[in-house]
Picture 1: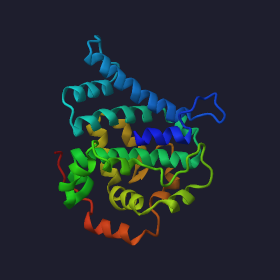
Picture 2: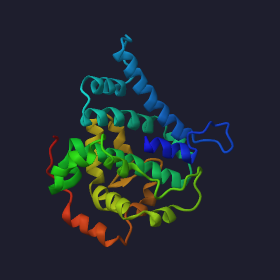
Picture 3: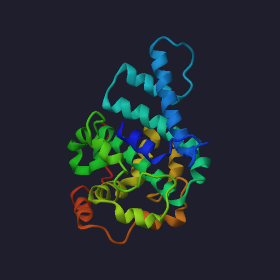
Picture 4: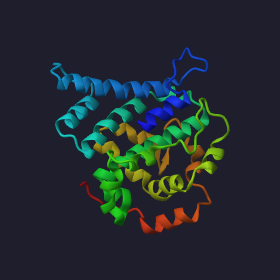
Length: 245
């Protein structure tokens, strides 16, 4: 709910006729998530017929077996399908907005991996994964929160570098210390787990490329990182040997 409130406060969900207007991309992605969830609720109440999408089937699986894993499976199936279906809207967003669309995506994929593939997500700290990723707790909200970095306004001004510089230690540790070294593996696992092979089009050589040029990949690989980021890289390095829970 905190993420929804943040979107509302930014104005990205405002009507397109408002002044200033909301974001067509953010509105479309949220609409997909709501539609899939509402269809699953209707089907659990007796609505017949074929589910409209694979994501709805995942929401039905969550209704039948409400666990952290089935919740992420359903939520991220809706989110990734919406991302892929609305790349044209993403391309129309400002450069800093497009950067953060990638940040949101990689963070929700990582939160899923904490629960379902903790060794991929945390290496030798894998035993902490299910707790850190449990959507019933407040911790995953910290992972996806951008409120400490982005101002409550839309559209964004400034350049990407200004927002990256404003990111606090927890965000840097997450994005650059934990997630960045395993991004290619993470997207590969997510594409298979969510049955969305096109998700691999959003990553290239470990650099996110959703509505983002590979030529601008330097932003994902800053030359200088905080000591805490270097420390977490040493404590929890990525591994090539991991298994699904």
